[in-house]
Amino acid sequence: MQFKQDYFEQLEGFYSQVYPLPISNPHWLGWSEDAAQLIGLQQPNDELLMQLSANHAAPGASYYAQVYSGHQFGGYTPRLGDGRSIILGEAIGPNGAWDVALKGGGPTPYSRQGDGRAVMRSAVREFLVSEALAALNVPTSRALAVIGSDLPVWRESQETAAITVRLAKSHIRFGHFEYFFHSEKGDAGKLTQLVDFTIKQHYPHLSTDAAGYKQWFYEVVKSTAIMIAHWQSVGFAHGVMNTDNMSILGDTFDFGPFSFLDTFKEDFICNHSDHEGRYAFGQQPGVGLWNLKRLAQVLTPIIESDDLIAALNTYQDELVKQYLLLMRAKLGLPQLNISANKLSEAEQAELNKQDLHLVGQLTVLLESNQLDYSNSLRDFGQLDPNSSHSVLRDSMVDLAGFDTWYQAYQDRMGKVDDVNMWQGERNGVNPKYILRNYLAQEAIIDIEENGDNSKLLQLQQVLSRPYDEQPEMEDLAKRPPDWGQGLIMSCSS
Image (tube, rainbow, N blue to C red; front, side):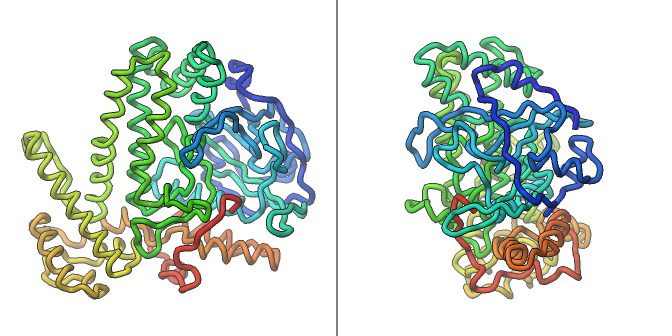
């Protein structure tokens, strides 16, 4: 790996230098060839394994943990930071640089009496979900590898430590800006320095002045809305949307008790610590805005309040726009071609309202009929939208409710000239394979009990081609068994 060290060299005082502790008997559990290409790596080798397990120093690495704060479940915690993640630097790839971090690399000054380790089950889950989301075209951090060991660690019981090697275009979070606003007690020097660095590194088309700051916040609002629209469209619940887990670039990261929906439930909670349902699946769009408002508050020393409010006011429209773009593709609804169709703003708004209602009514049907979200959308690839009979109807209990919806759907669709092409397009955007929690759990159990990572590797390969028919893997597309429905995870998972 070839590193540059812009964050380390330009932002002294924004981190603590700390060296990772090695794990014993390191071995590859998983490796992402796709992620490796991002930083110019080829095949894994023994020396790279020793470097990424902290047994050997990586040439050119600086090793540091970032400091930040954040709102956790609505309450402000003034000092958090990387408690179990140590960054090596920015690895230079063919199309840009990616932070390389060892998640589970040992204690840091921000570990808050923790051991700084990741247990194998959490490392495997982060590895799988990072790569699964990337294959679904959801903005996300990546996972280069997951490395197992025989190092014992204690949670509820004795487990073994592992390291996820995370790649991220940036590890800067909303919580970074909160920390330097509150800790500097009115001095905007470090806050401005951080904003300038973020713009120069990741928004180079913008200037580092009042006009640039204003436009930068608009783009942060937009990228956050796009990310959450993707989550809602694929049925992904993050589970712990604290401001310290919100990327300033609008990438999904810091995975804990995440879950993809099995049976559709608007109020699905995947985090066993979320007793009030703050981060339930259907709450995610609202939480995204709440988090952006917390970010806006700490940017008031350098951006006018009116400009911050104006940017925040674009969030809902951007979220709806992106969500409809994705869901129209999934359901095969005609996209709005405003210039070609010469739609007025009023006509466009009416169609958006109509389509949003159509999508919403479908999710109501999925929930009331207790249907699987991803499999139901995949069925659109077998639907003939010109026919009065629908394969979707075969799964419904509320037939009258479905018939009403389907008539409205057909009225909106109009006639489809090439049904085969239309069906192929649906299969190209509705995945057959998603990372169901029970599948990840089965892979983890096989590693724990048998030292066998073959299920993990098989699952990784299937999830790397989520839209493809893979007949030999058909069982992995089925609804979960009863024990695997809607599994709720802890933050350590």
